Amino acid sequence: MEARLDLDGNPIRPITICMIGAGGFIGSHLCEKLMTETPHTVLAVDVYNDKIKHLMEQPAGGQPHPWVGRIQFHRLNIKNDSRLEGLIKMSDLTINLAAICTPADYNTRPLDTIYSNFIDALPVVRYCSENDKRLIHFSTCEVYGKTIGSFLPKDHPLRKEPEFYVLKEDLSPCILGPIEKQRWSYACAKQLTERLIYAEGAENGLEFTIVRPFNWIGPRMDFIPGVDGPSEGVPRVLACFSNNLLRREPLKLVDGGQSLRTFVYIKDAIEAVLLMIENPDRANGHIFNVGNPNNEVTVKQLAEIMTEVYSKVSGEPPLEVPTIDISSEEFYGEGYDDSDRRIPDMTIINRQLGWNPKTSLHDLLYSTLTYQRKTYAEAIKRMMAKPTAT
Ligand code: NAD
Ligand code: UDP
Image (cartoon, rainbow, N blue to C red; front, side):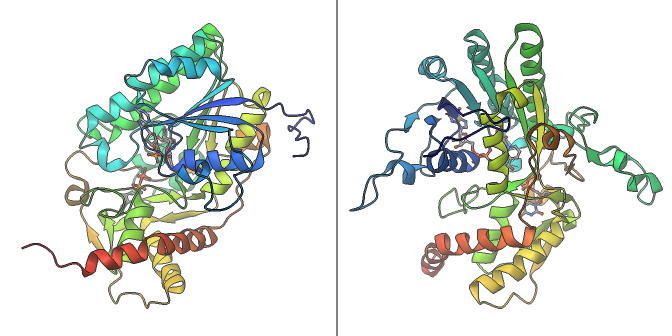
C-alpha cells in the first residue's frame, strides 16, 4: 500500500480502532472501508456480526483477504461487559456507534431508548477520558428537533429564510417536543450525551469528535420484516419502502408524507468519517453535520422516486395505487411526533475537512434498490408462496 497522507501532507500512521456497534449499518460500511483502503486495525464490538461476516470469513476456495488479522470481532454487550475497558485501552481511537436508533422504538420502548443512547454511552466516555483515548461519538441530526420556522404560520415569509430552517452545529437551538411525545426520548438522550462529551473535553481535556448523521442510507440498512428481522418490526423509511416494493404493496405515507428529509449515500458519508479518523487535529473538539443538503425531498416524493426507480430495476410496472396515507398514531402508536425538515449547514465540515457529498438521490436509490432486489427478492417470493396458518 502506498504511503497515505493526511490533509496537511503528513504520512498517516496505522492505528487500532475500537469500533462499538461495528456490526450495524454504518459500522459495516466503515469496517469495509478501513479494511480495503487503509492499514488500520479494527476491534469490532457488537452483539451481532452478520453484516461484517464477509470481511472475516475466508473467501471459498480463494486467497485469504489481504486484511486478514486486521479485524477482530468481539461479541459483547456494552451494557454489562467488563472487557470493554480493556479493548478501549488497547486502541488509539474509540468510535461509538452503538444505539437503539429506529424511530418506531422511541415512543414504544422509551426506557430502552434512553438507556441505550445515554446510560450505556457513559462508560465509553469515561474510559476514553480516564485513559486519554480519542473518541468519535455518533449522535444524530435529530438533536436539532424541529426547525424554528415550523412554529410560524404556514405561509409566513420568514419560513423561506435559511436562518429559520438550516441547521448549524454552533448556532441552531435544539427544539424538542413535550415529554408526553416520547418520540423525543432518543434526541434528548443523544443531546445529553453530546453535552457530557463536550464537558469532558472542556474540563478534562477529552479529545472528541461528535458526528450528527442526516439520514444516511444505502445497502445493509436495517432489516426486511419477516426476512432478516421480526415480521412485526418497523425499520427506518428506506427499509419500510423497500419491503413494500419487494412485496408489491403500497408504500405507507405517515400523516401524508409531508415531512422533509435530506438523504445522503452511505458511501459518501463514510468518506467524511475516514477524514475525521485520519485528521485528528482538524476533527478534535468539533461537532460535524454529515448530510447532503442537495438531496431534499418530502417523504411522499421519496416514495414516488423509489417506486419509479424500483420499476426500472425490477422490470415490473408500478402498482396502480402506489401509496396510501396512514396516521402516525396507527403506524407508530401513541407519542409519535416528527422532525419537519432537516437541512445540514456544511460550513464547518467544509472548512475543517473539505468534505462534500457527491451522489444524487436518484443514483443512490438506483444502486441501493438494485442491492435490495438482489438480496431479498427470492426470499420474499418464497415466503409469500407459503400457505399462511389459519
Ligand atoms: P444500526 O442499528 O444499524 O447499528 C447500531 C449497532 O449497535 C447494531 O449493530 C447493534 O447491534 C449495536 N449495539 C446496540 N446496542 C449495543 C450494545 N449494548 N452492545 C453492543 N452493541 C450494541 O444503526 P446505524 O444506522 O448504523 O447507526 C449507528 C449510529 O449512528 C447510532 O448511534 C445512530 O444513533 C447514529 N445515527 C445514524 C443515522 C443514520 O442515518 N443511519 C442517523 C442518525 C444517527
Ligand atoms: N415514514 C413513512 N412511511 C414509512 C416509514 C417512515 O412515511 O413506512 C416517514 C416517517 O414518519 C418520517 C420519515 O419517513 O417522517 C423518515 O423516517 P425514518 O424512520 O427513516 O427516520 P427519521 O428520519 O424520522 O429519523
